[in-house]
Amino acid sequence: MAVARRVLAVRAWPGGVADLAVRMRSAASPDVAGAVADGDLVAVYAFGGGAYVAAHDVAAAFLAARQATGVWRSVRFQRQGGFAIDDWEPLREAVRDLLAAGPATRAELGAHLAGIPALAHLATAASTAAGADTLIKPLHWWGDVCFGPPRDGQSTFRLLAGDPRWPGPLDVDDAGRTLVRLVLGSYAPSTTANLEHWIREGLSVPARRLAGWVDDLGDEVVRVDGTLCLTTDADAIASATPSTAVHLLPGYDPWVMVPGTADASLVAEHRRPLATRGANLVLHGGVVAGTWRRTDRALAVTWFDEAGDVPDLDEAVARLGAVVGRELAVTLERDGRAVRPSG
Image 1 (cartoon, helix red, strand yellow):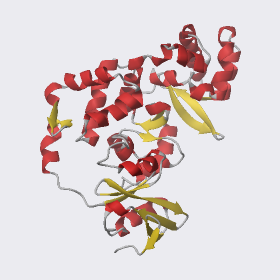
Image 2 (cartoon, one colour; image 1 turned 90 degrees about the horizontal axis):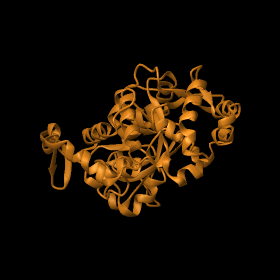
Image 3 (tube, helix red, strand yellow; image 1 turned 180 degrees about the horizontal axis):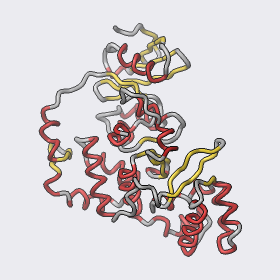
Image 4 (cartoon, helix red, strand yellow; image 1 turned 180 degrees about the vertical axis):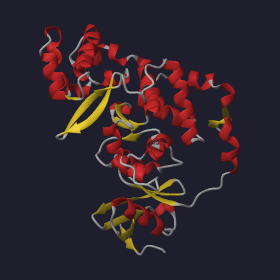
């Protein structure tokens, strides 16, 4: 799915966010949930411990990079999940044995572990997602499993081994360099802080290791005015003209979440909590200019005072309406003051 690859990763939760993020960028109506269920995309635990949807090779890169800290070896992590380091390899083998027959729910995983004396103490943690799914997350990071298709409203997990689209285990540093290329290919020009937000903070990669990955790329990367981009994209970025387009994006959209809500060139500092908490955002020229909310056919847009005059919203509203299958009636406010939309 080309859009999913271009944005790199989209939040899998809350439900519908990934579909909306992708559909708002596509002339077609891609079904992200269906693509995950069919195995065309993968859903995995990744950034900040949350679940994300991505193309197989992109997911393989950021999951391998996630291994850089070896956080599962820490006493705190083991205590949170109620396991010991010696449990890992037997656990991985037990999970592979269960999932060889097909996707399984947490309850089924817990029942399977309960039947293995050496692993029975992990059954409750596996079946209840105890400690924010601490027991399961490293199995994602190692590329053993991903989320499978939901069953009766319950999450399932499936094996990645045997999936012809899965590239298999990657060297951590090779994956890190690939990840830097991917981020710069989709979100340049990027500052070091942008890279650190998604890779260092999101994947817990040590700052020195991330800096080493950037340095390793050598002439593949060019630095201009404190930002980085791929050398192959430098001329196109330098000759690009500013956009005045308006876009209505769902909460947790990668346009903001990859570079980070702390980037004041994207989100005004006093608006950061809105973006961080997952408000639906209005972009004007790529910058957060407001928020929106929809109830059936009613669309309420709040335009921020610092964003200046309200532009024509018709095209953006029509796009959202086409995606959700509704003709939308718009009301417009400016930080609490009702106004008539321009255009």
